[in-house]
Amino acid sequence: MANHIVCLHFFHPLFLFFTLIASLTVQAFTGTYGINYGRIANNIPSPDEVVTLLRAAKIKNVRIYDADHSVLEAFSGTGLEIVVGLPNGQLQDMSANADHALNWVKDNVQSFLPRTRIVGIAVGNEVLGGDDLSLWGSLLGAVKNIYNATKKLHLDDQIEISTANSFAVFANSYPPSSCKFKDNVSQYMKPLLEFFSQIGSPFCLNAYPFLAYINDPDQIDINYALFKPTKGIYDPEFRLHYDNMLDAQIDAAYAALEDAGFHKMEVIVTETGWASDGDQNEVGANVSNARTYNYNLRKRLAKKKGTPHRPKNVVKAYIFAIFNENSKPGPTSERNFGLFKADGSISYEIGFHGLNAGDSSLLSLKNIKNQGLSQSYAMVFSLSALILLIFWNQ
Image 1 (spheres, rainbow, N blue to C red):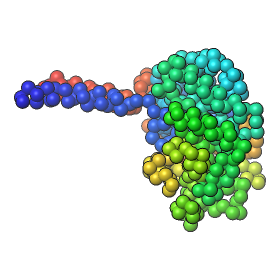
Image 2: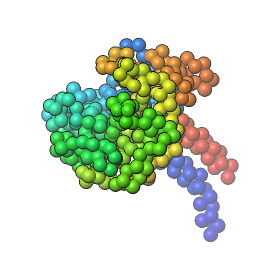
Image 3: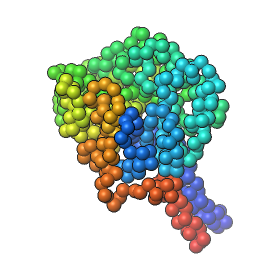
Image 4: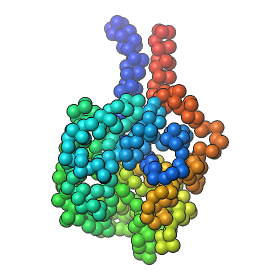
């Protein structure tokens, strides 16, 4: 008995250490809060400065819309987790040629691992329901070829394959329980969802209460869109009350998935945000509403709660976006979704610090690069030193 007790006492710290190491496995989304790093601008900070900004803001989950090597190099050794994008313009080529897909994954993903923590590939963006019908038929082939490339390179257990969808794929989303995929979309969506179901990928949704509000400001309560106190809506089919529009939009997606036969697929919000400026007809696009939406969204995500229809599925969302992007086409709002201005200062106060904040907690780029480790890994090595100290003092 004494010998057994000694053995248990001897191995306990080591067991704890390896348990901590095992808990740091790669996930496609850590926590509930992420951000989109769009770069359609000629005046935004460099990728190295963006790393400093994100680390200071404690934002770990990042999405980009391509696989730009300067960004992937800047993220190396920082612990930030990034989803890269295969642009829509490459879908047809990747769908038609598996070798091209393999080379793309080799050049833009494998070559940067493991120092750059690439955790996902978004194949196309808002393809189904979009204006370019020629891409609809190429999406599934591109998704399969990219996935097969990761499998061939033994990366499929750490790289999640997905594609983001806009509300254009839905025939109706009010009330949430009535939501279904459009008939012309469904013939492309169902085979795609079947494949995603097989490989364990989520349904990615770009959800914008802002867009719903500016398209119908007379009928939609601005407080409902901004997470402010309101009477909300009641869904008689679900028999559920909604006090904010984002929850309703997410549950509308769940209803469409259920109608299509995919009851277990998770919904992740890959874009959401509110413009701080807009054209005269873009009612509600102002700094006050943008601050209110993004501040209240942070609070809502921090609660780590689900939606009324799916209370056990914690809501996860990527905010759009880091910066105002001055080169984006379209209405003024398109260039004013950033939490930060082009010079790295904050667009409005929601608890983040800008590059020029002068705050003592702002991490320097040099320190981040020299560390070469995420905070979680630093914690483990500190604990390991303590464990070894305990061990040697036995």
